[in-house]
Image (cartoon, rainbow, N blue to C red; front, side, top):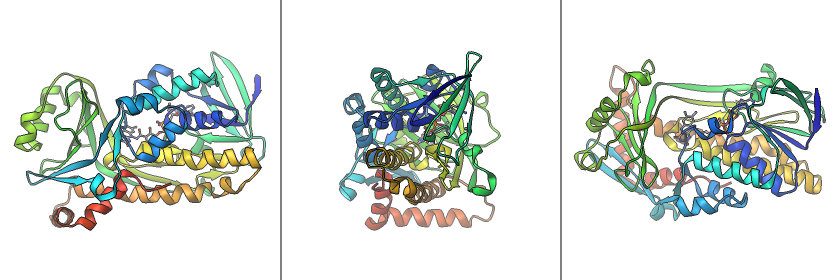
Length: 392
Ligand SMILES: Cc1cc2nc3c(=O)[nH]c(=O)nc-3n(C[C@H](O)[C@H](O)[C@H](O)COP(=O)(O)OP(=O)(O)OC[C@H]3O[C@@H](n4cnc5c(N)ncnc54)[C@H](O)[C@@H]3O)c2cc1C
């Protein structure tokens, strides 16, 4: 077994692991990032696309802001379509803030390039990662690569390995509490190299189900449809997708819709999930390893960024001035913000989707909620404040 040592071992090279690694590296803290997949596989995943100002600022702090500033699209609001009428929520006017549309794939690419330029270690295709001794001050991470076994001794482990990773599973069951809601539908998404139908995102509440007109750039559109959980991508040839989307859009939007062959198509189930606490011994959970939100509020990637902000500051204080206060406060600080984003994502999901409910009561409440939202500046401000991101 080949042995090595670092200060912080980071498991996972998604946005959480790469961003944490970059911030710590710039502060002079040694890290090794382990990723079970290949670099190309990680870069091929199509996921989030909306960045809050806090996430943008953090990426700039990490030295990864140049291309994002150049290519990202500033959005000052969103539209919500209900009963065939579109209502605009003006973030800029309501909060003075905006969001930036810049795909998670691009964020990941920028962070990977920054790490390579810095010459900091990252091991792709690191298999069978296991974590031990987390209750001691010498935790260990073992993995294998090309049939060779490795062991890293470290001070801390950052579990940035997503919902299915090994980090959360390392924490004893009786030391953790989980909270979960699984929604009775999924999102069928397609990516297409066509100009988006609108400059802003359009969220659609329609009797046939939710739809979202989104984008990743000025020439690349991302569209979603609420679908059943038992449906497969193969049930949805492109033509069927465009027909169904057309049925859920208003006539003006439909006129602007540019259809084309999909370059990616996938179904994502919707789930709310939180694991508490986000620390066990010297293992810290970050991002999707600790929490999942349905994508309706565009919060998944942004929550990963706020966790990274809290943890990177805490580790920098630990190594800079030997202060443990930030590390001790990490779970509480991170979770306070996580739960607010969980609430907002649940609420957006609740008001925009069609739920299977026979009595019609939920549908009437949903209509009342939306009508109140469209008529009340206070309600719109509450939505806008959460969408652009709560402070951290
Ligand atoms: C299909 C899908 C669509 C999404 N769409 C949206 C969206 O539209 N909007 C939005 O805001 N959010 C969306 N999200 C959520 C958002 O992408 C995540 O919140 C974000 O990726 C979290 O980043 P992370 O780094 O914490 O986790 P991840 O991005 O999941 O990264 C974890 C990394 O750890 C690696 N890993 C896992 N296990 C191990 C192991 N044992 N050893 C080593 N490495 C390991 C994984 O390969 C992965 O690279 C989506 C998520 C999914 C899954």
